[in-house]
Length: 75
Image 1 (cartoon, rainbow, N blue to C red):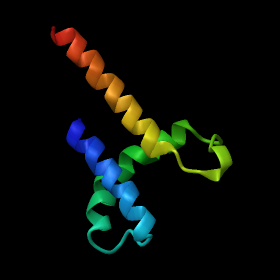
Image 2 (tube, rainbow, N blue to C red):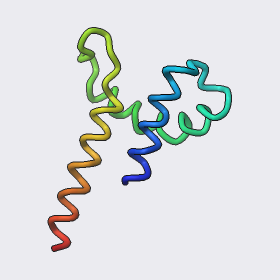
Image 3 (cartoon, rainbow, N blue to C red):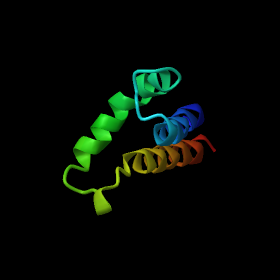
């Protein structure tokens, strides 16, 4: 999960400097993250504060919560 959160963060950073998701390296990160981010965007339909896409932040928070819950069950 930590690796996936890192890939999401890298995709966000790359989207700021390389808008085109067809060129490398963004194509790789976009292929891995976009299916899950589409689900998050669908769940957040109509809720984008100020027009910002906050779905990557929401996804990272959800994955972190899942990781903490799993860690709690493991002890």
